[in-house]
Image 1 (tube, rainbow, N blue to C red):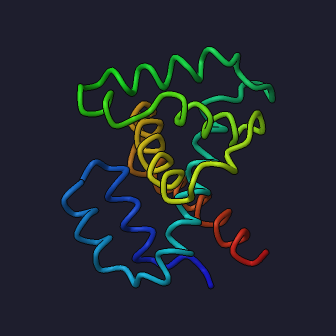
Image 2: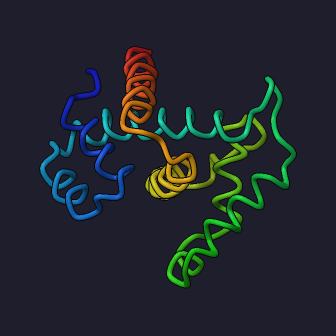
Image 3: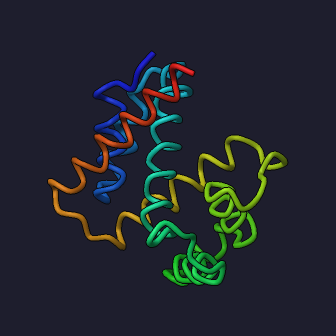
Length: 149
């Protein structure tokens, strides 16, 4: 199995802030394929974005930068502050940076937080269309590699 074009375009819609289109496209994905290919694409994109955001010159940024990022994301509005548990968000980010474990957090929760945090990281980068294409191509390549393991 490999990431499909539909899965890639669904994630693109999410990252471009086209929420209604993202939800419509998400509803059209094959559920079995979405549970593997789309979830793996989100995980790979989250991994790539976290590395871009929290590794500089080959070294992890100080932990307080992760904590500050989560606080900034939560401060966007009251709904986000209520929905996004800072402890879980920080643990998921630290785990992707090899600085923690999230085995006790269920997969659906992890995926939901990854989607949310990924969108925030990409939004902060203000990527051009070409840069977003390159980012998604790299995430797809990573996800396809992970799917073969």
